[in-house]
Image 1 (cartoon, rainbow, N blue to C red):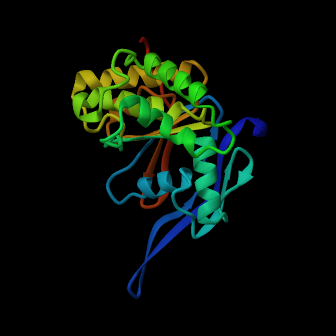
Image 2: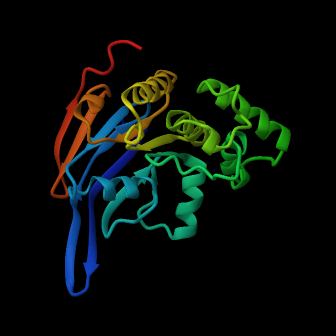
Length: 238
């Protein structure tokens, strides 16, 4: 159903100017992602997958084509408008965690709420919500720890809690297990699957086929075009 779409792109193109040379990164990508889906985006280096992720995350704008997020055309918005969309509707999980080292886990999680105009600015409410999310990802005992006092897997858990603090429409995960050992990576994937089962819409960039295969669907990008769009079996058990 069209009403159920979170993401719709229509012939997305992105061209970078390198001196006198135009370098196409996306050559006309059209995809649909529905509410509640868990989708992996794959592709070799230079395929355009990172460019696509940046556009889906409102971190960049296409050179041509349309991008509709929650039925709103965001492809022509300016930087300030895109920043507002990012804060209100999107939650980001990065490979390198992107936590502020001088802030505790709790403070890192609260931070996006400070920039969210839809919140009432009630510090007690924000703190309570952040504590609940850190407890959800298994870090209830470490809310006052700083990033240097946490393992990579624990830092990524903080990043997941931070991504959820504004109750985003869409969670974007860019190689979320890329810096982790296999045990920590599996723990992070388990959390993502639990979030998906709770109704979250998740789009994840990964270069690992076994991880992509655990999602509902894989979109593979090659040479700036959709090469494969297939259903997966999903994770069999948690």
